[in-house]
Figure 1 (cartoon, chains in turn orange, brown):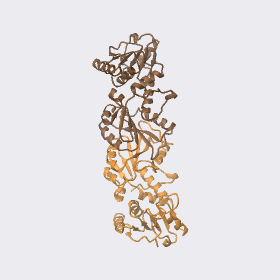
Figure 2 (cartoon, rainbow over the protein chains, first blue to last red; figure 1 turned 180 degrees about the vertical axis):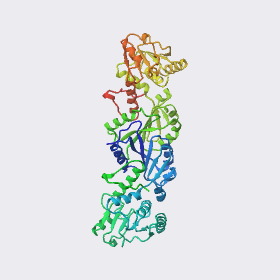
Figure 3 (cartoon, rainbow over the protein chains, first blue to last red; figure 1 turned 120 degrees about the vertical axis):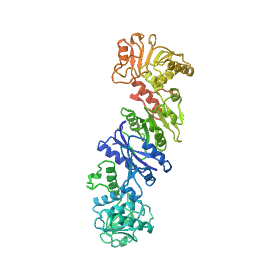
Length: 278
Length: 278
């Protein structure tokens, strides 16, 4: 059931192109209904060329309280908000904006802390674990900072673009003090292996790591959110490894994003961390 | 129950300031739910100074299909649309915009034909009747053109601004061929008397016409939409006159406005006119 809309209802927007697969309006509207919040989330279908004009218009709406931002606007929107949460600065992208009563827009992205929260829910918290992270793009960058900040004993970052992996590792080490370095995508010896590449989304993709070299008892987190387990997860399970798909990370980032917007969201009644988003 | 909102839901906006008393989101959303239209109407709270910026942004939304326009934007919006329906040109205001797939915005206002439709529903159609219309503002102008076009035998328009009444009467006569003129607010001899002034909204308002001079059997239409009958309606009823409040006009204009947006709206199952809006 969706919120009851009147003239005084506050607006939350989901801005992107396309929005055909979007799920967040349903999530927010269910939350607003359950918590009796006089607000509604609606899609704003805006293409890349129109984004600046759209933002000027959206800033003219006195009842817009926030926005979720999806493809292709996550990077471009950085320059159109007034303030960046540290999460957005680290990742170089945002996916949620809070519109303050004084008119300031603050952008953030919680993929990294959301991934750690999802790992915690699944009993796979990275504290004191050796972690191999494959993929140093947007999602990988966010996860690298968050896994390091969550107390991984060491973090190796691998990417086909070795310079990108090295740069990210250096930033993570400098910012968190974690023992972070770049390296090859060899899972041998790691307690946790995280796939943050798109490999596994398409049928004929190569494996992001060689599952034959997974350590006994390793935990494999594949952030790809598909109906069927990815080939990596299937191979890891066949070796007796515990695995986790992209669902917990997605729900975890939603907890933080909704908290950033002022709402208490507990998917399936799960507890949320006492420590706020960083 | 409100529409179920997904990423592909079309948007209709209500733009105005304030919107605290707005009822149209509820009306449209009930219609969308009943007719299983994948659309939702939400409030856009925009002040006068921000209207041009808002419009530029709203034009950047690929899923905005229409807007309802209320105070204080009904006149100012004329210059911000691409095309005006004849109704909007006659009245010099608009309150509904259709956003065409090719990006054109077309503005219209159906207060006049809506008033006539409401009168028809109540058995008070103005065809072949002598009509006194008091008030030559926005609503009065719309009603004057529509009552004349609906076949009133003659129309007298009265306003505290006599020049405004005279100008409107001349335009109506020229455009419709109706015997229209300006005159004093004396109801004697008229079969239908319409109050299109705000007199009667506040407790100590003067009467728009002297009810003692209402003809026997006259019909009194007061477009003020209040919970309690206005003093004019009470006095007219005490003299045995049939009266009508602003409700039928409001529902009548909604029929036309929703038809203009592509929807078939039949309040309380009433039939709608076979002739489209002019």
